Every structure is written in structure tokens, then in C-alpha cells.
Length: 167
Image (cartoon, rainbow, N blue to C red; front, side):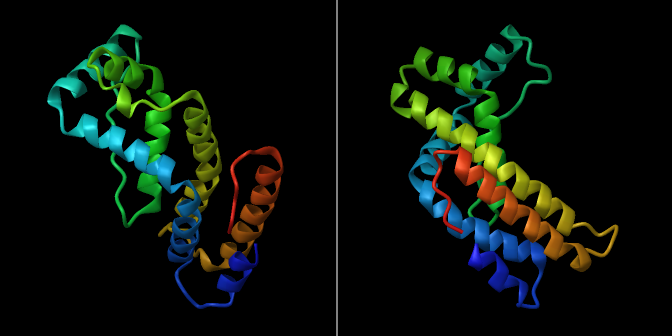
């Protein structure tokens, strides 16, 4: 928590500060994120798997059909979007992987639980990032309130979650 408060003293872009904090915190979940990145990459390299995923979604009345999102190294929120999308498409992704003999890419039940927990955690940071990245209103005046809110959220989250948070 001290890390968040130290950055308030620096005259820097609030969104960039959050980017640095979150990127350093995600190191704790690096193995899980890498596994999810492998799944996303596996699908993105195979038009056949993407087509089967689309068909699975049609079968289960998911409209519009959602695409797999790849994480980009320089943007933490792309990791959030990738995890969020994989979590939404979990059942369809697993079916396609199993049907194609790609079980080595499948996550186990605990890993999927941790993906859902990460999505829940990072959703607050994604919203905060959008708020302080706005060009429709001045954001410097709200940055301290956002950081305070995130600090409180992290305290509450860490008391209720099995995910270790080191900020």
C-alpha cells in the first residue's frame, strides 16, 4: 500500500503510474497469465480453432460471437481483457481444445478460479485507468480519491480472496 502513496508525490501521469503499479503486481500471477497467453496464442494462430470457437458460441447462443484477445506486453489492461474474455468463453474454449486433442493448453479448476479472481481484481483498476485517462474533464483533482478508493478496495479484496496482492 505504501507503493501507491509514494507515487502520489511524483508529478507524473496518473494512468502511467497505475500501469507501472499493476505491471509490477502482476508478476505474482505470471505463470497463470503465461498459460492464458498460450491459450490465446494457440487460438490466434489457428483459423480452424477460431472457426470452431465461433461455432461453439453459436451452439450456446452467444451473440455476438466473441473473439479471443491477446495480451500486449506494454499494456496491462490488454492482460485484463484477455483474462476477462477467456473467463467468459471458458466452456467453449475448453470444448474446442478437448475436441482437438489440445488438453495440454487447458487450465485446471483452480487455475480458472484464479483467472476469475484476477478479472474481479483488475476490473477496478481498469475502471480507474479509464477515469484518469479521460480527455473530457481534468483528472489530476480526482487522482488522489481514486488511489484512496483502490487502496481500500485492495484491503477488502485481499481479506476475502486467495490471491496474494503485493502492491
